[in-house]
Length: 327
Image (tube, rainbow, N blue to C red; front, side, top):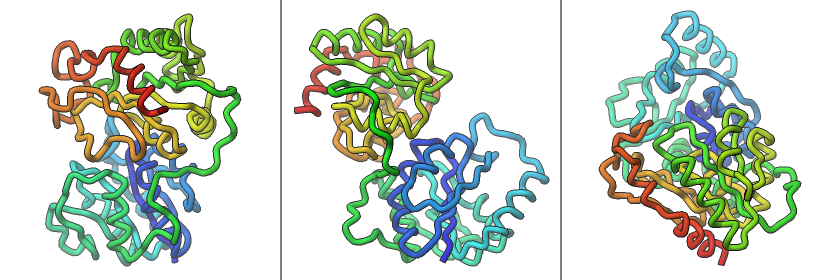
């Protein structure tokens, strides 16, 4: 059997699809359809046989134009996959039906997804209801509805392929200040003060970030931290996170990557999306006002002056949270 699993968002979203992928992989090959920002994570998921990249115009931000040629091309490509079943994994605010239409036109014989809208003939198995459950569980429920189950001994945690060993000798704490959505992370100066506070508390601090975040990581690391900004692939970052005592991070992909390698997380979590769904899927401490005025807005940029949900968190709170998760 060949299963197509679709999750068209970013790295963190793709990592949360891991348990569903492993369940589908018990029946055969898994082809993973994802957006450009999710390819690196898809390549790390155990059970994935092949990755197909597509910038979906109703998911990507900023969104590309809808062009007939592009839709025809992805339809033809998916037809060539010849999958037996497709699992469409979405967040609570996304509809699976546009992609279901493309998959139906591509000849997929069975399509399974969660949909609050009437799907007509677009879905063969439709899950309804949308409780506040962790995103990884939400995705796994789609796989279960398709008839797949986790293999014996698999506890449903996040997982990635074995990363390389960290080049850093223990012990150390990772601070990851960046995020693709600015509202979901701390202000740069707060991060810098946290590095100073952690260092003063006796921790060796390593600051990580992507190639576009080197100015940020350099500022945050300052004179106290070791700056690894732009120096690791996602797989290498997984190794650095795996070697850490704890990871301090906003609501962004590396929080889920840390959970996938079993490292506890101190999560600077803005309530623009619900923590019940998106908090790290493993041992963690949540910091931030979860009842702030921005709650549930899904805002990309903080809609409240001063970013109070997170910027009222003191660096001393981070030091205490690291002590809690590493106790």
